[in-house]
Length: 402
Ligand code: NAD
Image (tube, rainbow, N blue to C red; front, side, top):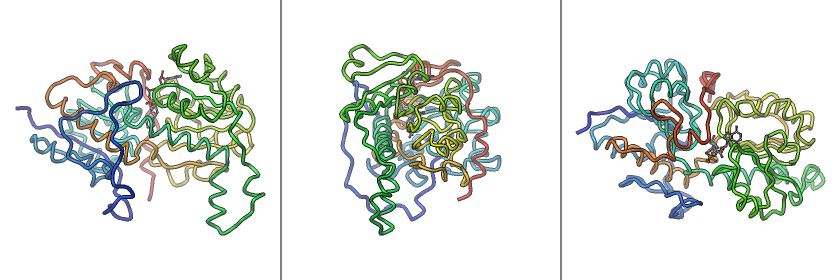
């Protein structure tokens, strides 16, 4: 019999228009494995309906029956920012924290210092930069995520946004809604992507999926990564490898960013790097907002150095109402949604349940889910991150007002 643990779970708010009573579709496709063969999340059981909203407070990631059935305590809140937040108060004696990158509960060094029992931080999704990984390393906290759960979801969003920018979809849609038919206005920034050069920064699970999805568009494909792909993978897609990001951006018209946020990539796209890009380049960033310098992006859109910027990731999150990316020209931003489609939610809810089942039973967590364990980067963390902290400035999230 394990002793009772306190599981503190931070989820985004329920829909402002009310929790759905019906859904647009009757279910989601059932997948048997991820590309490359990694197995799907495999909990002993699930207590939710795949395809229903699980990532907001009332969805509870489908965990309550399971966690409370084992005698543990489950606290769920969306109130995550500031010293008076429910998260900060409940953290003091929590054993496990669960958080989604879309509505990240920033686990800064300060908060880790205050949480005397914390042993495990689970990312319900992918990307654990909202945790001060250096502090997790120093305090022997295990950090893990549900690797692959939404990689394809994000790849689909990135391809959508590449096309939205190059073809200039958003203003054309707006024209229709406004009852207009001004074709010349509509096409004055619209191009075909055929023949362009498209590159990804990092060709991991998401970056490679983007390259595969862009291949049929008859573009030339480029990538850079700290781990080079195999010759067979490069040949299959006709990829050009670049040893560094500067070489990549000089060769591309469109750059899609897919590396994690860690000290090597924080503010990688600054004014200097953006100035080396071809005039009129497009950037799509579905990786992390802080990989780009927000003011440098806005300025480059104003001057025309960038023809467009899209993505779904901001810093901090939620983005303040006056965040410059909300109002800069020629952007096609969404809030952080790409990895939390109803399809993705079912996979990461199952993955979190699998992790908790193993945790409560004292079994090992799969290597590919691990970011930090035993005072070191481990598993996917050792492959894709570097040590250090990138949460600086996250307290700004407390300024968000609905
Ligand atoms: P992955 O671990 O499969 O791939 C990451 C790749 O980045 C690896 O190939 C690694 O070698 C490369 N990399 C790391 N540091 C680099 C550097 N300095 N220069 C070049 N390459 C570098 O992870 P993934 O599933 O492809 O996800 C990547 C990232 O996408 C996540 O860490 C997360 O930040 C982001 N993400 C966003 C969403 C969303 O909803 N927008 C969802 C999932 C993931």
